[in-house]
Image (cartoon, rainbow, N blue to C red):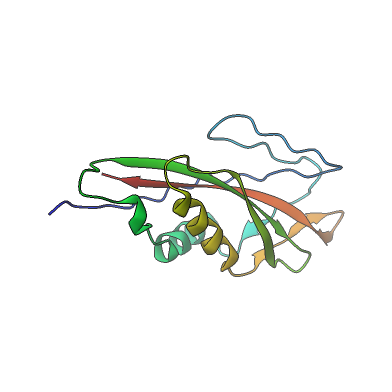
Length: 139
């Protein structure tokens, strides 16, 4: 029987929305907004975000079959964080071209995220958007 391994790789970066300014640089990095004094952050930091994703993402069974030996795909999810840190309005910026179920799983896990620490601007919590690349990999 084949050994399946799901590796979740998240390159965290803030996605920028200031007066309709959103800039995607490359496949692996998104630009941050400079207008925030403090960018939004998963409560507990990056390490706990990785742990949350590792514990909650389920690799879609429809992406696996017996002839598949390797599979790699990255899904970019953009979501809003309100002044209280609540996550909402997840949407796919760039999905997996091989398996639409990876897109659905990325949206599901983002929608179920606990509250974040909101962005701070001028000592006040403000609404923001965040882009989270989530990679699915089978070896």
